[in-house]
Image (cartoon, rainbow, N blue to C red; front, top):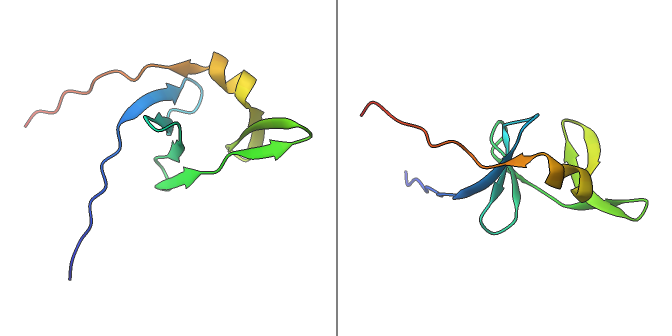
Length: 74
């Protein structure tokens, strides 16, 4: 059996849902499910489905923060 490892570089995270992360290639990634979230359009607004509800890019940009570095004991 062969395994494949993919490494992502996190650029931003959401302050109200920290498991949604934006990657360096401007894709939204859900760390809980391990999936890339697609950008969708709703009534002329562009955004993402976050926690089951549509959030526009304008709203999401206000809630993006830089991730804190994590220290591992090994």
